[in-house]
Length: 178
Image (cartoon, rainbow, N blue to C red; front, side):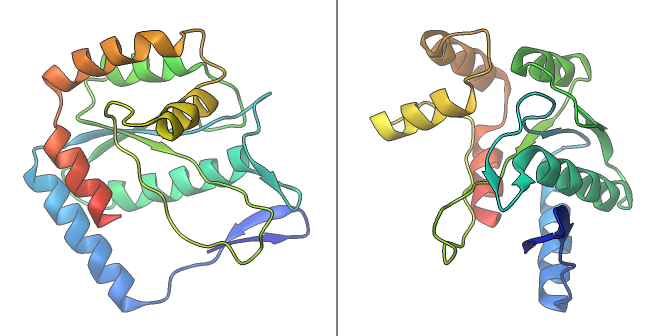
């Protein structure tokens, strides 16, 4: 649960033992996939604040979440974690993915949050790297990658190249778990 407190981002701590058990099972499952090095990408940053609501920027929220996820993963044996950014700085998408490749990442986890003018809106969206299946998915990908120097026309070739060497089934399973 994300709340704004006097213009600062605060993420309410999960107190449910059920959530802790689910997280533990998820980490155990991920470890069976042979995933040991995870690159976490807190989206946006610097001159690109991402979504904004109630004086809170997406870039600040996702950086806080990424640092917390890093701490959780590092507390588990067998995980090596690398972050694409640790401060509010802009890093182009191409540099983020290049870092994941240089680090020989088994998993690239890009964290984003949404904003809505409707305060009752709740929920989680999970996306995995795959081909856009409809115009809405293409439009969403174009918005999220608007700061990229690459055009959306090259995306299918990039996805094909990555899919040949990555774990699409595991990505889908992780997306279902979230």
